[in-house]
Length: 162
Image (cartoon, rainbow, N blue to C red; front, side):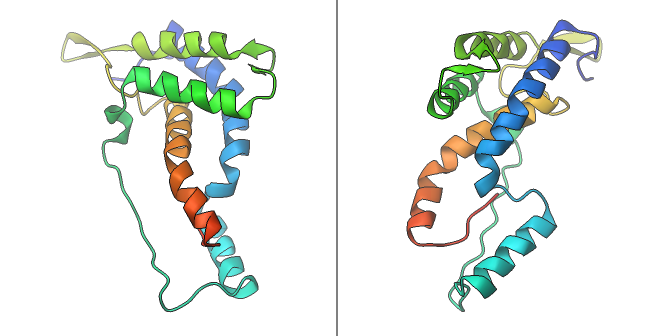
């Protein structure tokens, strides 16, 4: 069962997602394929404009099947804080401080409860994959993790995206 659309956590998540998603998408755009067409466009540019595609080019796909439930809440909040501090010029996003954003994200993550088979459960890792904020937080987490990979790829003028 998904959390109710009328719950406080749902409303907080929607607010945070409207606040964070445009900013996150702007910061992650260079390493994100928005869809299959975007991937083909970037691959075509890489191959025909930059003339970088060769017979030794390796294509890799990584699938993380349980991603929405594998990252602890503390880690998600810590990574969010690092991401915001690294990318915000004045430690505020639309006049909302990083600390306030952190506190609201913690409130959302630590207070998500749901009912299943007449029992009440709390989500202890990740977040509900039915909420857009969970996807936004996951994108931040992956962006921070991919920094090491993307720096090496950029040095070698290779194509990288997710």
